[in-house]
Length: 438
Ligand code: XLS
Ligand code: NI
Ligand code: NI
View 1 (tube, rainbow, N blue to C red):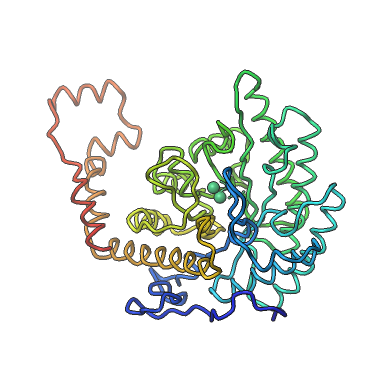
View 2 (cartoon, rainbow, N blue to C red):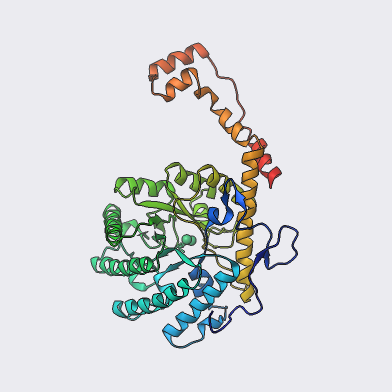
């Protein structure tokens, strides 16, 4: 165990059932409970985002950080990083989450040059390894922060300057090495600054070709080192860049197909990125699942009254139930899990707030999963949707699906049939089914 206890007075969080009045308990998340043949723990593979929960201290464009974390006190870079890791592991063990996700420089501060940064990463990952060996904690995915440092102001892999692109390559190589050293199960690319602010100074085609080439090189390097995990692209339409190339799932799928990356890459879908792209979360999950590319989820939520990536913890059971329906019907995530890419509010300054936030998120996912299971098992939900397409199950509809009817043949059929009957979409009926099972 760590020398110092950071979350004093907080005991391991337990499942106590829906009637529990203990705010530091799970009411729905029971890791061992089976849902459709698989335990909740396996369905979800929850992960904590190192950056939001341990690195960021609540600063925003209008003011400094507000969160005075005891693991941020040591003046020595490595000692401070170790304290932070002790805090992270203590938190993970107490909340009962077995995974974390990180950017390279969440683990330890970036150095003044690449060499120093590499040394620091080596030291902190040595420390991580010893802690991981003594616990059940694993890495769901690692990534490189290619957006915070000023050098990336014009992008990383899509930077018009080759020198920045190669610097980013060095950083990704190190981040891949670190992820592999910690036996990370996946590796993420989120292109925060891969896009443009103005088309006037941008050769979009050339930048996207560079991005594809960069991804190929990263993938080839990792595969050569024996990495067997999945690479994820995390779509987002904008913020910080005005237009990001990985706009949404459909755009990413087109990109992966065009540049021959589809066999190694899958998608990490984030709730608030979906809504920023004017989609529902369920829509993005479905698009990814239909392409066989639903890899992982970044769990959070946006705010109905503004358009930003507010990264709040998930509380909307209706939204989550729709998501869990897609998850269950598409037979789960390919390689990934559910990473809480979410932050407590700037004025949530108690250490226990981190617990309440994650407990809520996990419980809400659990409740949504149970609801989705009940909908699939005890309602007409699937039947109603299937029935809408019944005319394609036999006769000419079936022939059409099999490619056996020409346009002229269809036209002839229409002449004989005349005006089609009106058939209701029954949306309200379906919406009520969801609510009845919540
Ligand atoms: C930002 C992204 C980021 C990625 C990892 O909006 O969600 O946190 O998940 O780089
Ligand atoms: Ni994210
Ligand atoms: Ni995000």
